[in-house]
Length: 178
Length: 387
Image 1 (cartoon, rainbow over the protein chains, first blue to last red):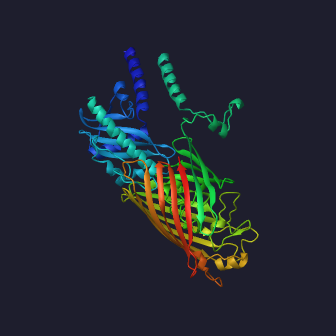
Image 2 (tube, rainbow over the protein chains, first blue to last red; image 1 turned 60 degrees about the horizontal axis):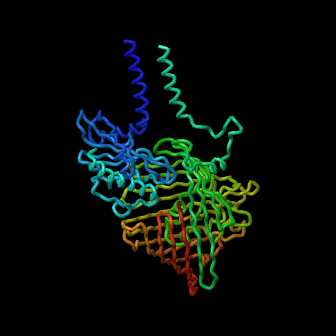
Image 3 (cartoon, rainbow over the protein chains, first blue to last red; image 1 turned 45 degrees about the vertical axis):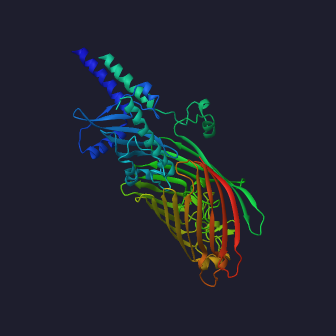
């Protein structure tokens, strides 16, 4: 009995630490909020997708253990979530891309923006431009995605980030990971 | 049981050690480094440190005059993020090679996602160019002339305030208390030709007896469009010995409206600024100057990228019309000086060879309201970078 308790404690300690490494609490809270809004369901689970190293090297940007997740509702995969960072003028911001089952963008959201300059990319209206895009789409700032005056660096950075992710989707599909 | 406690302690201590960052004040004197050493020895990969800058070099030739060549601005940006909430930003500027200024030096602390507390030497949010003046962000070799004579760019003073965004409403706000212009800056006075420009203290041993207030609201809820409403209110600063004398200082109330629009290869921007100066008659009598009682100006600019959007490079043709008057009205016996009522037509090309590097060429026609006065024609060439 004692032995079991010890094992339980060790596993508990390891898992809580791993969990903390995967997604910071502040981000997790915001992601949860967006999931509820987008899928109109609570108690959705995020299950991390591990990308094999040989596939990861083919990607435009490598996907780590805490970037890409299945969104699971009582054992059924209802979509995917991608969480990553991209550069702003003097810092980095955290963003979220939600995909439906068919790998089409449902929503994008700026989770944390840390500097003053360029924060306009959090505009709901501006981010709506990414909705409905899939790996078939090529996104170029100013051409396909309207510019934001005074937020060029961050708006361009977000466009590149989404475009790179969409290109990665094609590779992940080809390798039957998604 | 002991083992479990040990394991728990070990696990917690490892977690804590990973979070503790070395403080810049080291107890061991041999390990102490100053800011310059830290930057030089870095480590540019060091998280939190940002190095950037912008520069512009100009060639100007006005009709009837010889050409001038100038490394107009060379600005180095250094930023450091102490943690997710605390940032320091500074811009060190060399103007015309020989003048050194600090253009910005402020600390920002994020109270929440929507509220940042800021203190230090900051840009006064008025119009477009004062805040967004990096040479790759505007057309034309020179900044619009009213952003010199009416909005005295680069206008910065020491202050304290809050800024932030409400993305739900697509609004950015800034509210600050600033130190204001000085009534007399060495031998220089506020005056007719360039309004308040000579009164900028730029945070250099500046003096204060009147707090000034500045604010700006930016709305970006319509795709491609950004609208700005700026305000600045206060009084100029004067010496303790004369501050109660009539005319020792003037009241300043400035309002600005600006708009920027972009759709694919087309962009347009415009700005309107009106400044009301109270007690200018008393000021002029006391100091012997010719400061107007109101300043007003506007400009409109349209531009089109002549290259395909598939290309990284952009070749932008633009035309801008400006009308500004630093004697929009005068008080007392001071007659309006018509040479201060100016308009300018500028057309030219901006060749963006890379993101962050531009070559610029433009031609200007400068007129004043004096009847029969000759149009000054000016050729401007230059390049600008921003990284």
